[in-house]
Amino acid sequence: MPGKSIARRTLLRGMGTAIALPLLDSMIPAFTRAANTKAPCRMAMLYVPNGIVMDQWIPNLPEGSMALPAELPRVTSALMPFRSEITMLGGLTQNGGRALGDGPGDHGRAGANYLTCVHPKKTNGRDLQTGISVDQIAAKRLEGKTKFASLELGCEEGVQGGSCDNGYSCAYSNSISWRTPSSPMPAEIRPRAVFERLFGAADEDPRARRYEKSILDLVSSDAQRLNAQVGAADKRKLDEYLFSIRDLEKRIASAERSNAKAVKPSMGIPGSSIPTEFGEHARIMCDLLTLAFQTDSTRVATVLLALEQSPRAYPEIGIPEAHHGLTHHQGDKEKIEKVTQINCFHAKQLAYLLEKLRSTPDGDGTLLDHSMITYGSGLSDGNAHDHANLPMVLAGRGSGGVKPGRYVRYPRETPMANLYVAMLDRMGVPVESLGDSNGEVGYLSDL
Image 1 (tube, rainbow, N blue to C red):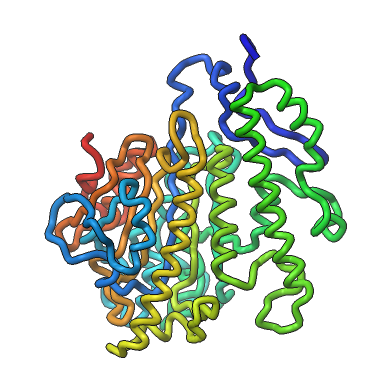
Image 2 (cartoon, rainbow, N blue to C red):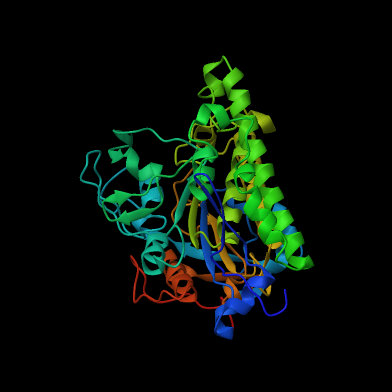
């Protein structure tokens, strides 16, 4: 409406429900300064365990910055549609994942060290000790700017208590996010719990609303009033946004119905919102992350696609064996092929998220334009437990702070922490150091 605008933090409200909105054209005049119309930068870290079949990840190219090859190997081939929007990085190392005198336990160290860049204390008790993870450094500095300082999402439940890897507490494997050196941030694996955290419950009695009611029913009056105030472009954007919420709501309810009917223990907890198939579970979590970024509910997130030493099998792609066991292949070509297929399947989930972000408008661009999404593992060769030359891809343009479409290979033993220092700087959260960092990595942009 000419001369009128709505506030950026406008919510659609209903009983027990408050739905945040994406950035609409009608909100921009509400800002008092043009600088405030710039979309914020977001950051998300996706983690896969047990290493990658590295010769199927990226060709062995020399040090320096160069254009990505015209073709990518099998594992990263799913990212070819995003070739101009990703930066593949080589040569990065997590020295803190190595033994450093503590003996076996590479998987426990890989998870705990991945975002903290600090060698974890070897303990299976309560005296946990690692570092503050990069996502939580950003979350603390950005606290108050969004509804949630950060989101910690996952697709596999960890063992609670005890030792999971040669004297390393299961807490080290269960989370890659650490609020303090001794306080992990557990990943939420239940889609319904994440949905209700973002939007609230549709009814006080979860049994009454679980399958039939939509959260949108409670805010329909507010939605209709808002629809009457905005222009044609915003009407379309609002309609697409509400449709995506309802579609996600239906998929979560579908998983709950399926699990409620299940009789086999392998089918999960009856009534659980966790889909039985990994692919659907991962996609729902990616959709929830997209909605959280779209509504500026948070600007920081982690996604633990699977745990270190994951025993998960992948029958949906024809692999009944446990992932971790297959990675200790000792050169067995059949096992290597199966690990490669699992690596490809994981990479497809990243491609799904990137497509969602790329197709979601955000200010003068898309969510992918205004994000930095990392994807990688705390091990390169899972069979050898190698912590050097880790697989890492950085997707997005970081609101202009990253120039994608390239492969960058850093000198051997370059600390992974240097990448995180550079990312924090682009998030507007500069730090002097993080973990074992000794500077910022170069080549991310022309700045």
